[in-house]
Image (cartoon, rainbow, N blue to C red):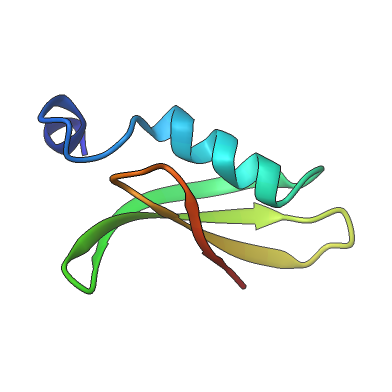
Length: 70
């Protein structure tokens, strides 16, 4: 992850976490991973909502924008 961030291939993890917080307001961020999906780098962030359910937020690594939420 550090190499991808230093080479400017992806946004910093804090940028991805901020995007996930905006997508799932009030949720606690539990885990963040940098993964390769469909040839692109994405952050997969697991958040725990206030109702006790988990939500997976996918953030595009290059742009820092939320790509999906399930």
